[in-house]
Image (cartoon, rainbow, N blue to C red; front, side):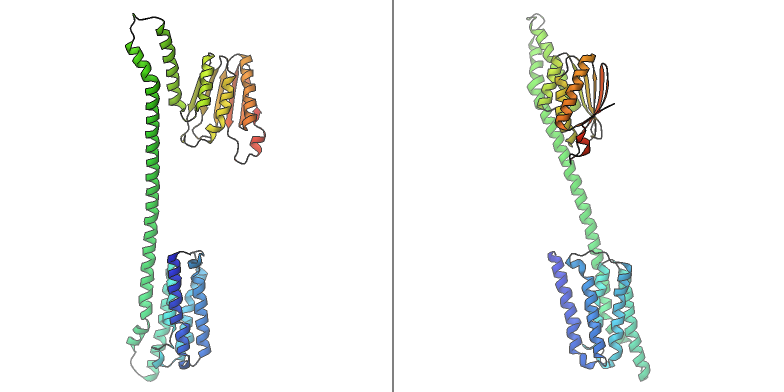
Length: 377
């Protein structure tokens, strides 16, 4: 229970006690049916306690049947009290129900049953008007409209106030929800901007450490210089070109061990391409699962052509290998061993000289799919 809920609960209890049991006991001598008046007090208090359950953490929703049953308590309590009082006692403590029943009305409004609350007030007003008009007809006096209005004063105050507070709460909830959504969007945009800036800084640092020194060396060189330096520069340029392509295509996938495996395979005359098509590269479950498998496959390559691609949804990674039948068979064996070691599920289509495989991360609970990591077609 929050502090606001405790304050509302305390206010409701104090109002109900001072306008229900206490005043009913003080005016019990004025009633011609004291037992009926006390029974009405008990019913009003019980219904109010049920309606105030949200203040103790209960649900705010209220069924239509329960709402109309609670609304009926207000006019029924009036019928249990007012007809058994003399006209002189209507403005005394003995006629306690118009004030005590307003907690029921307010609770109905807060629990989004305004029509039931309005019906409760109209029923109470009908009881008051009926009793006052009946007394005037018996005494032969003119209708006492002042008394009717005075006895309906709690209803004219509580119902509009409850509706106004409910409207303020609803508007506040909408504003808070919109503010939370705007804050979430702002945080996401800021995180994305920070990620882009960090990526740009990282790429710039890589270029300054690798490409810029090479370009400066080329710029300082001359055709008349030592011819032995040019093949070395060309080899380094090709290596950096491949590294830049890897970073553009799959920077979020390539970690240090996988980069080393890619360089090793290329040094053995293999053609390697890794492409990351995921829409959300920050969700790295698939990448983390397939990295050791790709490293194992690349370690078995001796000139084969390897293409690895992560699908846009981030659920599958495809692997295509082309080479001699013996080399492809060796790659298939390495793929099978890596799948068993990591639990990655691999669906393989193997032909002489070619291999096609789909890799998916093991389920979080480590169940059925991980128990059979290798499926051949």
